[in-house]
Amino acid sequence: MNTAIVTGATSYLGIELVARLTHENFKVHVIIRDTTNISRLIARVPDVNIHTHNGTQKNLNNIFLNVRPDIVFHLASKYVREEVSEDVEALISSNILFGTQLLEASANCNVKRFINTGSYFQFSNGQRPHVNLYGAAKSAFTKILSYYNNLNKFYSTTLVIYDIYGPSDWRIKLFPNIAKAVKNKLPLSIPRNEIFLYPVYYADVLDCYLLAANKLIYEPEDISGKYYAVRDKTPCTISEIIEVFEKVSGDKVIVKKGGWPKPEQEIDNIWRGKTLSGWKPSHSLLDGIKSMLKE
Image 1 (cartoon, one colour):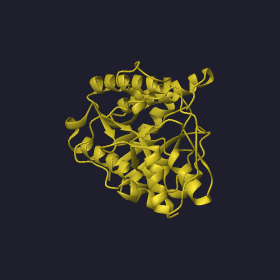
Image 2 (cartoon, rainbow, N blue to C red):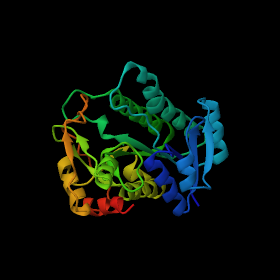
Image 3 (cartoon, rainbow, N blue to C red):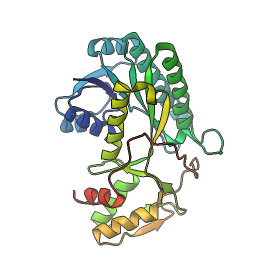
Image 4 (cartoon, one colour):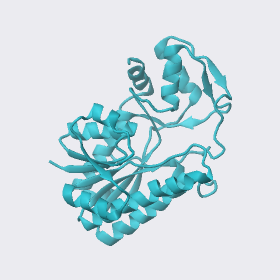
């Protein structure tokens, strides 16, 4: 039985990853802050092992020495839609400092396998280097990750996440907002101009994490130090997504264009990176939305 440490375990994706790893017979330990709300995690995976990080390197080293993980799944991050000066400390602490502490704890405990979670905001496709501090911080952390790779003969890979959707999603995101509008016949605010997205059903994203873990455990040289995009082949627009919701539900969505302003710091030309060999989404947009509306 492999032992895993998971960060970001109280996020929508993190909770589902913990549940999936448990189902796959991993012994799962999660690291949280003392202010973290764990109610959804406990409801989904009652027997999960929980460790509280007080912010110090010594504390994190002790957690790793006690757990002795075979692999780390690093999902924790901090994202702010419209950044202001007051967000700087939290963005740097979550997206750079905490990840670096994890790497140092891994080195101290001889943990050799690490899956990092990236974001397409790290890439700009010819625009200025980064469109927001979040993307710059995520990019900076991958450089630190490369340092530990070289220093400790450490195996890691970065899965670049796009737009995740699925049932029981409580986040204030596009897909849950559309589902709510459909079910309650409410008006839906969307940007005036179209935005292209690469939505991927949550279970397909979990498949990618499990495949990456398997490769790092058994064939680490093949993927170590590389980025992989967790995306579908072709993007779709918000209008196209709404059309699928309408097709599944049989109801027309009341759309209010311009009610949800497009962020000033937005990537218009989304990076299309290489996907992990052996992985592709198995759920169509139609099937995924059907599962959302069944709730």
